[in-house]
Length: 79
Image 1 (tube, rainbow, N blue to C red):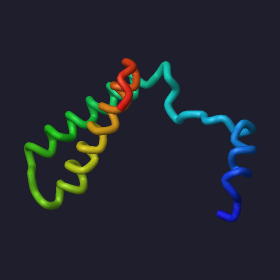
Image 2: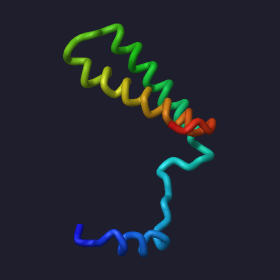
Image 3: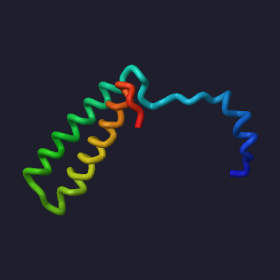
Image 4: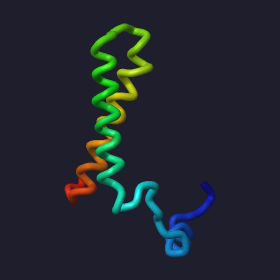
């Protein structure tokens, strides 16, 4: 972290931002994450216990959250 802001600004054009999920596939990734989150939520609803919370509940909520963000970005609504 010794670099100054000016040095970072000067080197930024040489390393463009490449997103992990491209613009053309955001809808597919978001839809898949939403389906995964909803299925994990259903599995968690059948067996709600303290053991299944970290195994099913937390990943389900994360998949729904990220899936919703990707779906909004794919249709042009930026959050």
